[in-house]
Every structure is written in C-alpha cells, then in structure tokens.
Image (cartoon, rainbow, N blue to C red; front, side, top):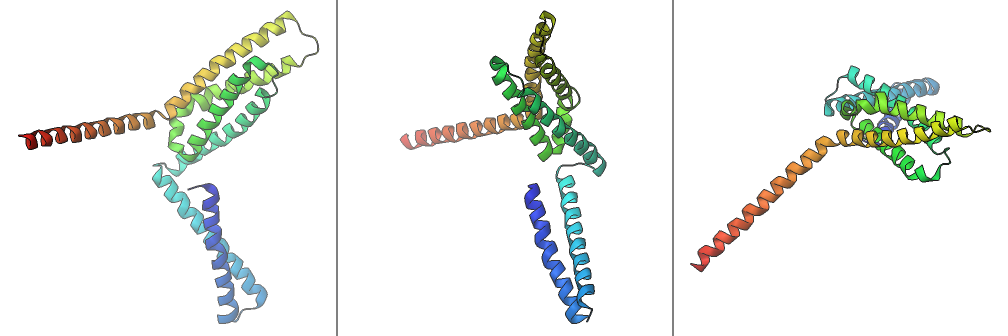
Length: 218
C-alpha cells in the first residue's frame, strides 16, 4: 500500500477511536473532562500503533521478508536515498553540455532502482551491486569532478582527469542500466512466459476454428 494511503488509514482509525474513548470516559464512566481527553488520546495512539503494526506485518508477509531482513534492506535503501540526492546535486552542477543526456539517464535509472526496491524490498537482493558499489562510485566520481571543474587554474593534468572521469561515468551509467535490468528480470521472464501462453492459446483457438470449418465443409 502507498505510504500516504497507509498513514491516512491509520488516522481514519485512530481519530474516531480517540473520540469514542473520550466520550465513553466522560459520559459513561463519569471521568473529568481533562482526564477523559488524556484517555482518549491514549486510546487513539494505541489504535494508531496497532494499525501500523498490522500493516507492517502484512507488508512483510506479502513480500516474504523477516523483520530483521526488512530492517537491513530499509537501512541500505535509506542510505541510498541520501546518496542519490548527492549524486543529483553533483551531476547537475557539471557544466559539460555534451554529457548532459548521459547524466540525466544515470539519475533517472538510479531513481527507478530506488523506487522499485523501496516498493518491493525483495528486489533489493538483485540490486546489491548498485547499492554497494556502483552508486558509491558514481557519487564519488561526480563530486570529485565538480571539485576539479571549478578550480580557477586548469592544467592539462586536470583536463585529462575530467575527461577520464566523464568516460568512467559513461561506463557506470551502462552498469547501472544493467542493474535495473537485473532488478526487473523476473518481470521480463514472467511477461515472456505470458506472451508464450497467449500465443499458444491463440494458435490453439485458430487451429480449432480451422478444424471446425473443415468439418462443416465436409
């Protein structure tokens, strides 16, 4: 479930629960107004927490993950979010126009991998090279490129380093695209399987119609 919708559901349960508990405490159990309010808030907080726990349990069950696995994955995904923000800032600080398209593609692909693994944490294991190697390299190279490119005095050595960095970033972009392909590889296999089944069904129906038509002509 979308995080916002999950939060909205928790609030839709917690707020009415809090109000109901307050009314019961104040009108039925004859508690003071302030005490009833405190009890109502506690009831709402408890309802919110229980709903969140149930949602998390269902989420882990649906994705076939243990709580420990999810915590490990979530930590790495959260770290990646900060790294992608740094990468975005660095790449769009580079003023080399010819490489703009490649840089945009690197950011777009990185964000796709992040969103896919965030929404379906099980995919994280297929994206480990991205999270533990390729993303770190891209961030480090991009930030060093920006640092060197703003130096007031350029030397041939700096120019060569900038050139090599751009080439390496191009290669990293290709690797990150391969990472994305690995993340969605199961979906591609499933789609190809469904296409084959659909083709087989279409062929079977077509053959059946031909046979039926032949029988009618006889």
